[in-house]
Image 1 (cartoon, rainbow, N blue to C red):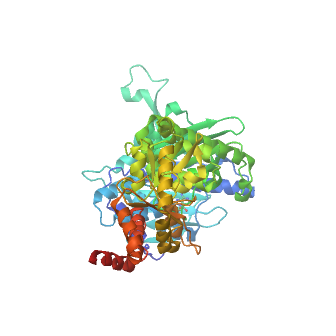
Image 2 (cartoon, protein in one colour):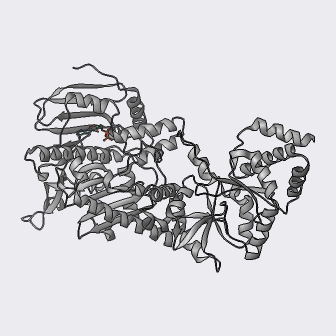
Length: 639
Ligand code: ADP
């Protein structure tokens, strides 16, 4: 007898949870074990293709054997199998995808209620250990492909496990569950009943592409039974192998056969997401590329979505066989949130990653998927606005990055998916909606940028533009203004920042009037400019302010907001907007400035600084030198 070994700490914790689980759908262990078996056969088949081992798809099968007397359930596959070391590593430690993800999530649930445990088990692929929800002891006999010796892993739970040599014909894995004893609440023996097993396979594993076989018993009327024979003697029982699953992957089925629930549960199991997807796209395309795609738009962005760690991609199948788990080339960055799979007959099976990158077929498919996703999103926007806004909250940023990063190349594709909060109802609107609602004679799309809609709303310039009856788009994400500038226009209407210097909203008369005022106050403005030094590029009077004394605008393409964004990034070179301090000549402060210009130049300089800082604060910028600012403020207050 080999020595008992301890489980690694995390494994032990997961195992404990499985053993003591109060989860009501313990039946999912069947799904988990069958999915592992199917993966193991995929692996061997794939290896065979690459190394010309000469195996056929039809050589593989999963066999389920219930034994009511011994109260065991055995699930066997003839897949790739495990070596002694692999048995140790794979089953003694939580190593792989599903279980690992599960563990990560458990970390945050550490102190949570049991009910959370339930939801976690319910949604995730929890892997091999789920066997312990229904079994008190589990043995795994396995022989790796090409190996001579088989090994048996065996465990009765958290105490540990053993691995020893054993006898086994052929490669593959045979898992035997010694079912727990029935309790008042739980019927574990039910899992040994034919009807139960059949219904579970249909429910969870119908699309597994290898046959899941079981010996089933059927009663037939005896042909030669005498008429008057007792009822039970009129029948005879036959046992025969039956394939329990239809083997058709869900994406190969007809849409009409499938319900939302089928798609949703497939998504949750396959992509380890708690939440149902926001939408699914199931398409079959023939033409320049023939493929089926099953795509999902998640409800929420994964925690690492906006980080470097996130890896985009779709599963790639060639005629039902998985050839790549995350094919990044199938998804453009702006749609990297999409999950799902593509199955194409046109792709060669033993194709390497490098070759795939140059595959023409793959490029055709990727282009076609991009259109499909865009159309689906547009449809959602038109028909299910609320849902779309939910989508936008989660992934809108990515679409905007898409326009910016593509140097405008993706403008046509993505511009109609954009939403910005509008000054009108403080609700998100599309650009099309904005343009449709434009005032007669309006030829620009006005926007303002800042930290939040509230902050923007309080901007001095916004007030006057709104007063003129123009709608303003509020840009509150860092990338927004970069995206808008990259687009330059929409539907032949130029974008125009209300925070820019030249708003051009005045009548000819007003223009003339302010021009004259500027000429009259030229010296005053020059003196203020001098006092501010290179903080501003210009100082001038404006007629766009109503209640505020001053505001900051920017004359070039780089806005004050963009300057802030750029300077928050870790680059050596500092960005600098061409700022202008604009003064409201109708404000009492203007008279005061005039007075100081004539009588107290030092105080004029202090005023200039204070007004500049105040205008910058309103723009959402921080005070460069708080000490100097307070000193100046005190000086004015003490006067
Ligand atoms: P996951 O399937 O999420 O990776 P599991 O806990 O279910 O996690 O399984 C752990 C590992 O054990 C698998 O990744 C696989 O390498 C191995 N394994 C499990 N079942 C089998 C099997 N039937 N045949 C071969 N290897 C298996």
